[in-house]
Image (cartoon, rainbow, N blue to C red):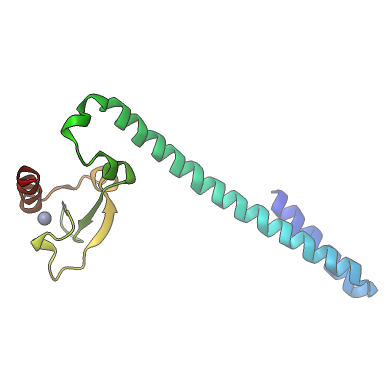
Length: 137
Ligand SMILES: [Zn+2]
């Protein structure tokens, strides 16, 4: 709303400046539009940030809940960053990088959290591959 008022004010100043030959008013108009632009940009960023913060808070809560399982999860640090998985459009499985089922496919990258939110399930091929890797070390 404030941005709209600023835009209107900027337009009026620009028009008056033009009509009256007052360069100062043109500068004022420019200033107002810059302020308006920054406000709109700031609002958009804040909205995005708060959405992200809400997500991060969720993730943190989950990590805190699972505190006791730290010893069983050597990859805890990676999970905190948001583990990345891959999905193939049209398939309801997600894969870890390098899974052979991704070869030659147009895979999309998601975080593990997003994949689980969208009801993807773990691919059995790379899930067992990962388990084997963990067992070997
Ligand atoms: Zn896979």
